[in-house]
Length: 382
Length: 142
Image (cartoon, rainbow over all chains, first blue to last red; front, side, top):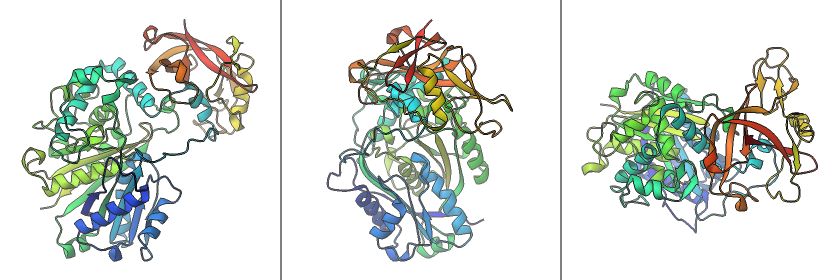
């Protein structure tokens, strides 16, 4: 079957964009990603947008960019994993000749914008059970999952902190990362408590910014002569949404389902994976995802990161741009894991920042309150 | 009756439950000191939060039963940042996922000091009445 090719990727300006709206940032990322692919707005025939603090975001971006009758429109909202999820829909559409050039885009002003208006009205029945507890979401929900993981597997706060430390080592190599100064495990443990067991450095940044990925058909990719980075496998699922109480097993995420499916579709094993970009809204998110995708045994994620496997020079370079913990996190980080995976496979970097000879990358999105999981396998074709 | 009901209407500044649909019976019972959960007469599935359908077999409007109001702490967090308006003066406070003796899990405040709680701790329910319409299930360590 034909597979979509990642023809272009880009971010908008990041960290603080006080004079921009989410739509501005999504649009800027889009035109930059098209430029990266040597394509024009005229050639775009599909748009997939999630997040964006508006109703019908795919229509808004299409209008904003004055697209000419796009044939592929996608706005499925499954949180931070939406963009990985879109890759599967784009693949289906391209296999049926429904689109040739699709932009997957995101924009936000999480940092300087007024943020989403949090109505006091309780409109979903589950909210009457959650909001009166005062649970600080999302950190408190992820923290409860982490606490259970510590109870069942002996995972320690020091091991969680290792994720923040190794991610910061990668961020030090990325000029776009917001935080690049080295930190230690003690720095993480001594940072301000947020929702135990999480301290401030266990939690992602809150940034402005946007990102975009341009997927094209194989035919279009040949026309363009871009490096053939293919979407070789995609799978998504969900376990719950409103209340983490509904998570069937609080220490296992949907990645345990989507990982094997995406790997099988791509025809790869873990040994084939050269680089992993795993959503890290919190230190625990990345740790549990490593386990659930099968990069280590269940319950051994703490030891895996403690041994330096994911740090620069490790056997599984992870979040090589610094991740949501140190690079940026405008809300739906999933678009940025795809961008970095593609750049590593293209060999865009030099020195330690570049994972040598990277041919297979795993990009994993997590959304909601550990609620949705989407795994994408990207492969550089010979 | 499965737990005491304390009137906290004067001091409560946090969000309050809004009884509606399948939740209405649950919240009405809290005012009487009863913690309800749904147990399907067709297939035996137990569930919370209340829903119009059984998640096991799809039966409509599964029946409510009265919980003993006991359980154990499945997991918990200590919130140092208030997650909702009206919680600023409470920090740090404990929110737990409580596994009821009957099976379903429920998110709830635990009225204890942060260093007193641990996973697996036995708990029992009490109720804080926060509006004329509902009382919150709040657990205490046993």
